[in-house]
Amino acid sequence: MTGYGLDQRDITLRVTIGGQMFVLDRQSARPGSGIFRIHKNGLSGFEAPEHRNTTAENAQVHGSYLEDQRITEREIKIKFDIVDYANTEKLRLGLLSAMRPAAEVTVDVIRAGQNRSIDGYITGSPRFAQATLYDFVTVTLTILCPVPFFRDTIIRTIAYRQVVPLWAYPLSPMVGVGVTAGMQILVTSKDLQNTGDVPSGIIATITANAGPVSKPGIILDRQPGEEYIQLMDVLPYKSTAVISTLPRRMMIQVDGLDHFMFDRDSTFFSLPLGISTLRLTAETPEDMDSATAQVQYYQYYMGV
Image 1 (cartoon, one colour):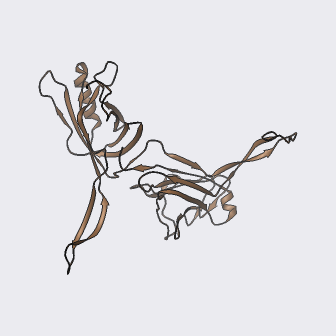
Image 2 (tube, helix red, strand yellow):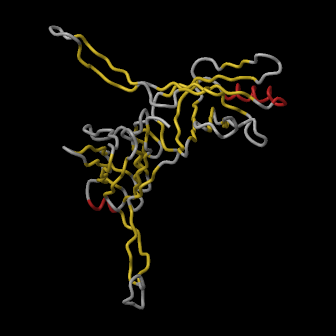
Image 3 (cartoon, helix red, strand yellow):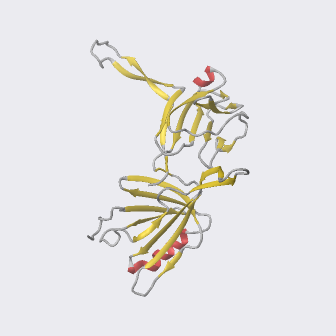
């Protein structure tokens, strides 16, 4: 049985290279659809990443023992046709101009109702091939992804504040009547849920909105103990501290500049699977009252 849209692995890719986005799908030959058509069996690297085990031989007994286990970087290969005959050369040059060295690549994948992304870099040489003058130009790309996990396309944001309900006048005994939204107050603790496949880094943003904040930080409550990241100086009035524990982007910045004055026992922790409690901290309760905060995080997955 043949026809457009009948492939069980119907998939659409949005590949952004150096700020330019190219849409690839398997139905591009349809009128009004895209101009880049994915080859049948032209994709690899979108399933689970490679697991690597390191073993060492036992000295006195048969066999070996496991020294290390890890998930290696992911290599994605994409093979597609340029199906617009009239503009093939223009489109080829557009692809080449985007594929400059060290240009970051983001691949957004839409497959079976799932929408996930992964970041990487073009590795090797992009290949352009045309069997005859009457055939489409075929492009082959290889993308190396140092972080091998796919993530949500939208980052989750948790604000550390809540609205305090206030009584309105005149009072009413009826449920829901006579109550109005009041002022917002800081909440120092929030539960975050990670339903992905692997632990996730976070981006915590703390702003000194009402005055300077001494030794701001964030604590992850977990068993058997807790992990935290805490600055060791004062966050000035109206300044913002950003704490990132994202893979390969672990850093602390204050007003956009790298900051290295933090507690030496600080840990750039990740959110474990399940529900975790994150608490804000500062030197005194008065310091906490001067701050506003939010935490952002992605959920990461083994594949699409």
